[in-house]
Amino acid sequence: MQYDSRQIEELVDDFLAKAKNEFSVADMFDAISEKISDWDPEFEDKLFNDLEQYLDTAPGLFRDTGDYEKFFPRRNFFLNKEFLAIPVQYELKHGVLIPGHRFAPFCCKEIYPSELTLRENGKSKPVKCKQISCPLPLAAVLHALLGSEQMMENFYVEDQRNHDILKQDNISGEIYLSAYDFGEFYKRHNFTFGDAIRFKIRNWETGKLDFEYLSQNDRDEKRISKWIDALDDVLPAVIDDHADYFDIPEQLAKAFFRSPDKLMDSPVSGIDEIPNRSNAVQLGFSGGRTVLTRKADASEDEDSSPPPGIMISEGATDSLQEILKDIKCPLRPAEIEAYILDEMFDGEASFDAFYSRCFDDLSLEFADDAQQAIFQNFVEELWEAHLDRYNRFNDDLKGPVRSRILELVEARNQWLREMQDIYEGTKAPPEESMKELAKAAGALCQMLELINTPDKVLPDSEVEAVYETLDKMEELQDQLMQNISTEMKKQQ
Image 1 (cartoon, rainbow, N blue to C red):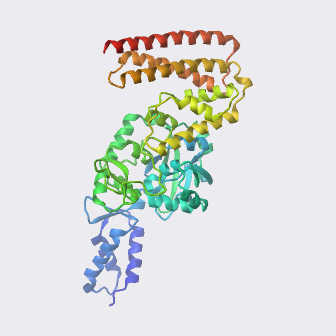
Image 2: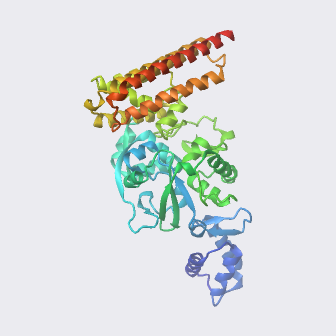
């Protein structure tokens, strides 16, 4: 007989289509050779080698690291497995979920990210896609785990206009992307930052997934850390085994396959949280491309700068609150909103004036230009949101109260700056007194959250009592700051 490559290829495809459990090259060899009626044993070595070579590169299979002769179909491994997407603040505001890198490790590469079939709890009507414009630095964050080459390719494919936008190398620019419309879903579940979407894979090959809401109350810090640690246990080994292989989604997929901890059974975290929370791996730059590398092996070679057009921040970027904490800003989101509304109450409505008043005197420690651009975008969106709905008439009673609270906020922050200038971190402030000061600041912030809410009304009958409360809070704050200053001087 002659060696019929076409016949063997058809038999291989048939074998893989029916395979449900792990198998070896020998298993496939036996199954195929038995189906060839005039099989000639002299082709045994050639067939075995051809099958081995094919299986080594087959995209639909995982290779079992416990036994290098075993392979497992991905469609079966991922069947009914679950993973999370944690929407960032920008997505919640605009009612969308940008696919980015979120689905890449868990779906067949042949399916474009915006062409998946997503159904809430298996309902018949899938979520629709729509086109949006997105700040370039944020888009880079949400696509970072694709790797730079795939990221740029996605940007180019999404919209022809992105070619010209990316050529400008404008960190403040926006690009056009496809995004899934989750606006009604977010609204129905009162979705807030920290909540997640839990996806269940129904068909890996065709990209069919169900999804449901997962509250942040079911994602406590201890369980998230445990999940990240379990993934950290396997990711470095995957990176080591594929040192010259830079496909990040593939590395992540193999890590989930290798992990003995069943990370895709009721997960509490997801790949969105890997860049900022992993203790074992990080995104780095090598040879003009982004790579996933061990943290201990952070690139220090000459070619460790980001690829052209790529602006991936090394700092927190998911929400305004996370960025404020990361850049050591003493202000909280409610206080920033109060500054916005105070500017509008005074009839100025100048974003530049507000931004200068709010941040010019603060020493903000941005990780890089990309983080600063995303921060400024968050703040500008917050400004525009309040500008669109601000009603000066309804703010007559609340406006002066807000201004009074901001006086206390500014006095506290001025004192903090003075203390920092005097002691420059050489002396630690008394812990208990600082906790009391933070508690007082939290109480003021809670008052601002209520006053900032448009539909919250401050009755005339309560105004005097509110001012009396603020006078007492000012006395308490002044006393606490004086006590801390006195104790710090005693340490000299």
